[in-house]
Amino acid sequence: MVERVIDDLAIFAVVAEERSFTRAASRLGVSQSALSQTIRALERRLGLQLLARTTRSVSATAAGSVLLEDLRPALEQIQTSLSKARHLRERPAGRIRLAVARAAALIVLLPKLKQFNRAYPDIVLEVTVEDGPIDLVAGEFDAGLQIGEFIQRDMIAVRATKDLRLAVVGSPEYFKNHARPRTPHDLKDHACVGFRFRSGMYRWEFEKGRKQVTVNPQGLVSFDDSELAIDAVLNGVGLGISLEEVLAPLIKQERLVQVLRDWCPTFPGFFLYYPSRRHQPAALAALISALRLSV
Image 1 (cartoon, rainbow, N blue to C red):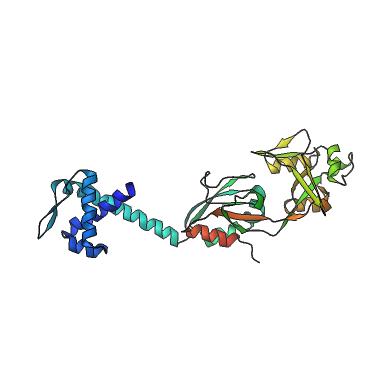
Image 2 (cartoon, rainbow, N blue to C red):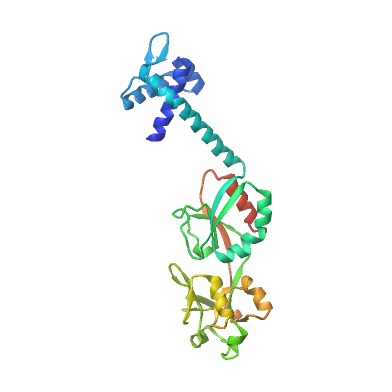
C-alpha cells in the first residue's frame, strides 16, 4: 500500500512538472487514460484535489502545491538511495553477514580471507561463529558455512571443501592409564569430552562396512565451544572428537593420538549456503566465487 502511494505521488509530480497529461504520459511511457485514472485514484485516497484541469492546461491546486514543496526533495532522496542500491548490486561492495562453523572458518574462510580482502576492499565481512544449525533468514544472515546435514533444504548450497573425516583423539598422557578403544562400543569405558549445540549434545556416529554405531559421549565435562573441548582433551581429561583436518597438526606433533580411524568414514564437507534470491548482490556473488571448491 505504501509503495503504491509513493509510486502514485511520483507520477503526480511528473504531471505537475509537465503541466500536461499528454507530455507526462509520453515521458512515463503510459497511456493518457491510465495516467488520468492513477491521479483520480490518488486524489480519492488522499481526499484532496491535487490538480486543476482545464481543456488547455493542468496545474497544481493550492493543496497540490504544498504537497509538491515537500514531495520533490523526498523523491530526489529516494532516487539517490535507489541509485546507491543499484550500484551495490553491480559493484562488489557492502556488508555481508556470515554464520560460520568454527572449523569452517579455519578450513575455508581464513586461508582465503587475505586474498579476498585485497580483491574486494569495499566488501566488509561480519562473521558470527555458530557451530550448530541456524536459520539464516531468522538470524538476518546473508550466507553461512556449514556441513551439509545442518543446512535447510530450501537453501542454495555450494560445495566449499572436499570430503572430510572426523577423528577421535586422546592425549598420550591419557593413554598411559587407559587402553585404546578398538571399537565404538569400547567408548563406554572411557571419559569422553562432550560437545554441545544449542539444540543438545553432539552424538558420535561411526560406520564400518554395513555396521553403524551411534554413541552418546559419557564424561564429566562438556563444552559448547569445540576449541575448548579439544583443549580439555590435550590436558588429558578424556577422549574427544573433531575434524581430522583441524586436528592433523596436533596428531603429527604427537600431542594427540588418533583412534578408531577405521570407524570414521568420510562425509561431504562444508558448503557455503544462502537463501534463494532473484537479484543476487554483487558482493555475495564475489564471495561465492571465492569460496567455491575448484574442481
